[in-house]
Amino acid sequence: MGERRPGVPLGSRLPREYAKESGANLMTPAALGAARREVEAMRAGSGQKIDEDRLWANLLSSQPLAFSLFAELGVDLGLATRVLGRLWPERIAQVTKVGFEYSPGRSNPKYTNDRTAFDVYVEHMTPRGGRGFIGIEVKYHEALTDAPAEHRPRYDEVTTAMRCFKPDLVGGLRRKPVEQIWRDHMLAGSMLLASSEWEGGLYVFLYPADNDRCRTAVQLYREHLSSAETFDAVTLERVTEAIEAETDAAWIRDVRDRYLAWNKTHFTIVAQPA
Image (cartoon, rainbow, N blue to C red; front, side, top):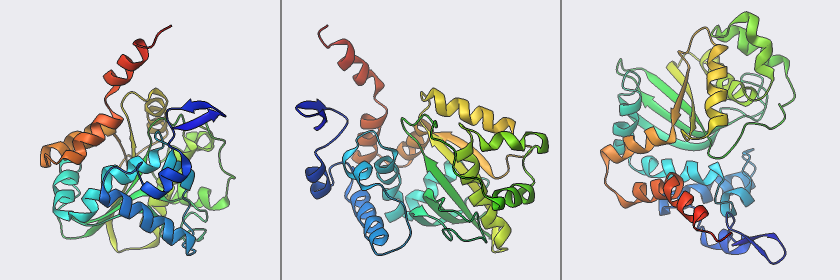
């Protein structure tokens, strides 16, 4: 375990050096391999933003969850096609790529002119033979209470050009808890605006059903939309069920047991002596 303060164990953290060397916070070899590749790319100057302490040592971080949930789909695109086709059948005919920490161009004025990136990025063929993409933001315990990022003029340009926001409510997008959702959604929108190669694109906000803060933020964000063609929200439970419907591999059972077995957490808490 890590320590809350010297000598006091913190059960949600692994010891830093052990975690970094072992990769124990990542739940499959594919997840560990993908995480290490992204960290190496960041160190080589890719511009990615990965908090290594969170990735390797924080058991509650959504970063290792993203890798543990999607890396196996990245090495088996047939499985990825079946799973994501269950979730978005009108969009996906064949998945061609699954990646992580993706931006088409960090700080590029062609897009959102900032360092926003998708936790998970999927490219696919559509039922009509075109190309599409899905950018996914993964949350776990996060409450979306971080201070909003510095506003950029490019945000106003992309927001107007996307034509999916209610004009009289645009000002509210700058405030928490919806501001981060908005910035990620704009990244997807800017990709569609920048290139005609895409038949369609979608931004997806993924969170556990019992995360009330995330659920409320999604509801509030939807109130700002005049069209949800490029936005969706999906629960961790629903994605896990879609994977379980297509494979009985032990790794997805392990993911569910670690991230969604709330009954075990409750039992542990109530069983503690007063």
